[in-house]
Image (cartoon, rainbow, N blue to C red; front, side, top):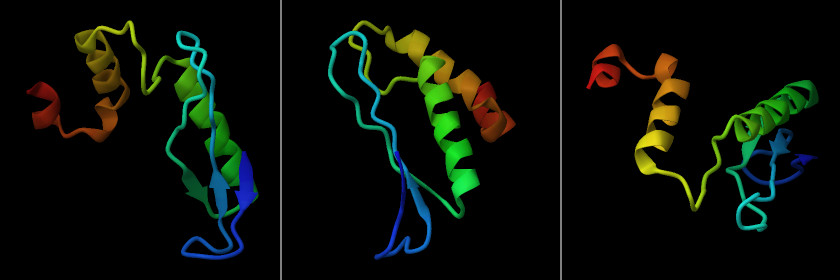
Length: 88
């Protein structure tokens, strides 16, 4: 969902929010809200959020093994983590 904010701290920005349905539990998940400066950036951000969800970065997966999920996260964030931290 993309919504232009008219009041508050993010006035004039576009709020981007997705709420996918968890395939395991069947419940709607809430992802963190993000903000974009214009509508085209908001659409790109929404597509990226859905791509992350489809790539398996669900916030809650009842059958997930912690070590496997943590490894997925580290590989996904490899470019943003310093080399020393990544090595550790």
